[in-house]
Amino acid sequence: MGTMNIMIVGVGGQGTLLASRILGNAVVRRGYDVKVSEVHGMSQRGGSVVTYVKYGDRVYSPVIDRGEADIILAFELLEAYRALPWLKQGGKIIVNTQRINPMPVITGAAEYPENIGEKLGALADLTAVDALELARRAGSEKAVNVVLIGVMAKSTAIPYEEWLDTVRTTVPEKFLDINLRAFELGYQL
Image 1: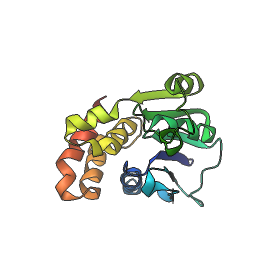
Image 2: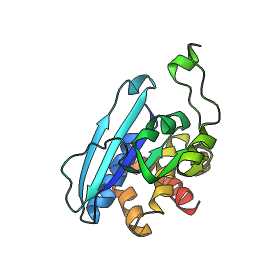
Image 3: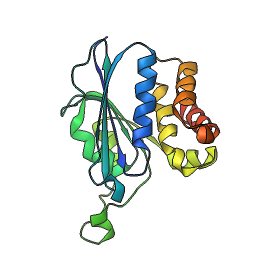
Image 4: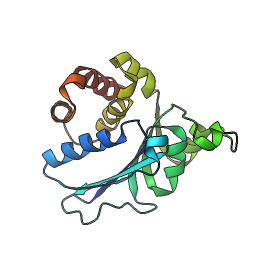
């Protein structure tokens, strides 16, 4: 197998790091070499968070260059739009339709771009998901990350049961039931 390049992008506090751990653990279980790199920025203040996950038979660097991402898993619309230059030709974007205003928009220094979903759809293979609503149905708004992992998991070669086992071994016990429901809702979408 060649290398698979996945960028996970979002805003601080959305659970991008847990999502990258679930993904990384799932592919390690399949015997792949995995490299993960996290770029936190001002994540504790609601800023951008980017995680690179690369896996394959042999991976030498975790960094994904522009035009190399096979999949962008985006937890927020504007973050998906910002990550678009990293998507390779024919790549896929899975995006939560939630809108979280960045600080320049909150302070009035900038405006949130209009029609991001349509722009993304015109430029890439796009799957737009109201992951926030599905997370609420699972029992917690904080489960958006696992809903999106569930959506992405359906397009991988990793069997459903292996994904469930990975969620079970990665998510803390007290949050497990909610996250298993969230994964299921995303996977069945």
